[in-house]
Length: 360
Image 1 (tube, rainbow, N blue to C red):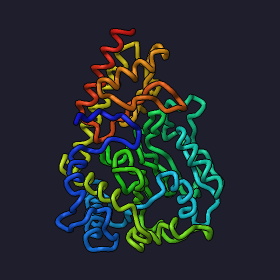
Image 2 (image 1 turned 120 degrees about the vertical axis):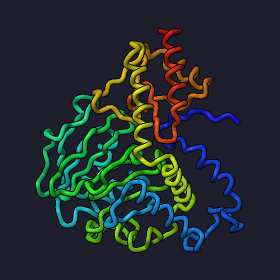
Image 3 (image 1 turned 135 degrees about the vertical axis):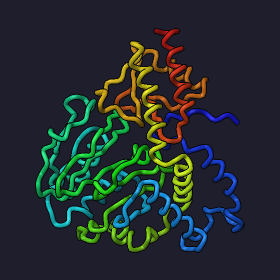
């Protein structure tokens, strides 16, 4: 069987070693005579899986002891409503930074529950940059400030962590979590959908400081209450057990690669190769301000968009798939998360050079 290089923005590639281990353990997990999918989530076997996954994530990210790790469902988009329900804590206003399409979705949902102050927006410039710290118009008594460090669709990534003073900082890290070290202590809450750098779709990870728990809006369903989930070790109901198992394998794989410092070096190298190929060939272009280019999601256009379909068809014959850009922006997009090997980026760069030579 020949594996392709899958540049999908999500669901995305998983490490091949993780898939191979899951394959070996599919019918019989560790001599239990059962698949992990068949186990009770409250049984001793699966409890050990969940506890190890949490311990490995805490270790690999350096998560302090006063933070809870929750394994939830509903994707990152469900968090858009859960955040104001849990974090307004009697206040009426929250700050949001608008740097793209996912920011806009988060803002629209939050506006159902509170007054949203747009602390900064890059919409006027077509979402090709991120605001600097000096450009942030923050509310001193806001309940929290929300931003998306990496916008998957436009390929824009902050190169700094905003300073919000005493206002809790909340980040949707769905598309760049685990790609490099991050100082978790600077955030009151980090959340991420799994299907990019963590595991398969269906699992959502929430990392939240303990003092943020326990003061929810009256309308908050029990399943949306972070404290209830924390008090029940994410087992208030049946969690997505197979997704959690696979995430645990990914966390262990990251440790085996040398942790997030090692991954950062690889990811930076992959991104630099691809951006260099784009910048050095007039046949290709990337609209994002260089300082704020994403390591994870690299959009680019061809000089002649009439060749887009040809590019995608020829790329597929070379085992380079899912390169079509998001429907909102068109063009191409190569998502190069942790599981994308450097050889995959090299293959894409080589194909792009050949395509440009033949069609440019």
